[in-house]
Image (cartoon, rainbow, N blue to C red; front, side):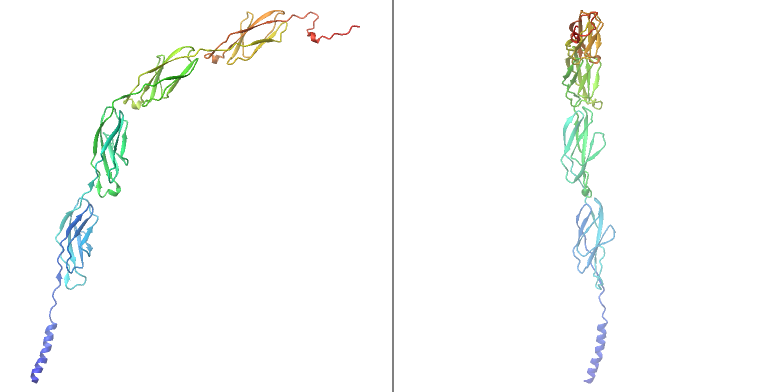
Length: 406
C-alpha cells in the first residue's frame, strides 16, 4: 500500500511539467474592411464600411497619399478636385499591444469620381429702348451669380454687377449680336462655373430726322433783333442764315442780329443739325423760317426855345435837354447851322432893333444814328434892343439918379 502512494506522488510533478509547457495560439489578422462610396461632392467624398470585429480603428488611403485615421466606420475626405477620378483603400487596425490580433491587410482599391462644378443658369435677355444709335438689354438676376459679362457685336467683353446695360454710339440700321453670361460669385467659385452665353440679335433703327426748330423773335429794334427756339433733341448745333446769305452755325438756341437797317423786312432760316459724332445717325431737320421787320428810327423831340440876355448887338437862346440827343444843330437867319453839345447858344455882333430868326433841332450822337434820327426844328424870333444914344453911357434907366438943380 505504501508503494502505491509513492508512485502517485512521483507522477504529480510530471503532470504539472506537462501542463506548464503548452504553446499559446498565434495572433490572427483582422479581416480587411470593404470600403463603399457613400457620396461624392465637388471637392470631397464620404466613404463607409461595416464594423470589423475586434478592430480598434481604421486607416484610409486615397491615391496612395498619407493615410487618414478614424475610429468610426465612415470618413469624409476633403480637398479633392472637381470632376477627378480617385482610388481609395482601407484597413482595420488592431488594438494597441494586442497579442491576439494583427492589423488587417489593405482592402482592394475602390474607384470613384468627384462631382463636376455646375454651370449657372443662362440669363434670359430682354431688349428695349431701341433707337438708331443704341438699345438697352436687361435680365433677371441669376442665382449664385456675382457678376455678368456681356458683349455687343465685335466689341470687347465687359463685366458688370448690374442686371442691364445700355449700348450706345452704334450704327443705324445695323444688326448686332448680343451675348450675356453669368459668372459665379466668389463664394460659389468652388462649386459653379460660368453659364452658357445667352444670345440675341438686335437691329438698330434707321436714321432719325431731327425736328425742325420753332422760331420766335424778340428784342426787335431799329437795327436788329434776336431769334430763339427750344433745343431740339439729338441736335448738336444749329445752322442759320439771314436773307438767304451764307450759312453760319451756333451751338446755342438763339442768335442775335445787329447793324441792320431800320424799317426793313428780314427773313431768318434755322436748321437743327446733328453733332459730328452723331452725323451717321441723324439727318438735319427741315429749314424753319421767320420774317422780322426792324423798327423805324426814333424821332427826337423838338427843343423848347427861349431867349434871354437880349441886348442891341447880342442875345442868348437856350432850351432844356432833349432825351437821347447827342448834339443840337443851331442856325440864325440864312447862316449855315452849327453844332453844339450844350443846351444854349450865344449870338453876338448883331444889329440893333433887328428881328432875328433862330432855329434849333436835336440830333443823335454818331453811335445812335441806327436808333434815333433828328427831330423837327424849333424856331424863335428875337429882336435886338435899340442902340444907346451918344450921351448914354450904357447904363439902364434904373441906374439913373436924378440930381437936384441949384
